Length: 157
Image (tube, rainbow, N blue to C red; front, side, top):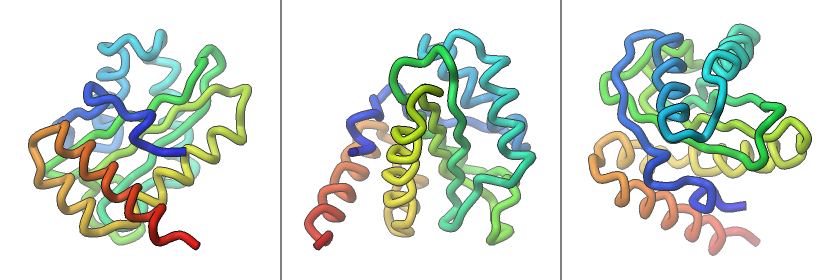
């Protein structure tokens, strides 16, 4: 499964929020604005509950907040960029700048894991994450991700 198949150009947003809660709220609000979700409060609470269990911040200044929703028909991915960075309780104790918000239909847990695996593969590229943070053109960001996915396919056995 390719991340770029799920990531529309409108699904990339730059936001400014100093806290973990503010970052989640900004991302959820953008999905509501795009009409990709119906209930922003339910999604926000599910994401916050997930973060309370353990932060989804990983290496390379990336976080992958995620959950499953009952009424969703297809997975939704939103790429959020915080140029100032957010204290998202990362394992590296560094600010998080790139957020891959993943929401999947509750009825398809295997699909949720597939989407998360696709995002995690992309998030491992430190160079790509630096480029995403620096790039202001959203179509170029999508192109960079597509190129990384193609490179990974060529490298796989």
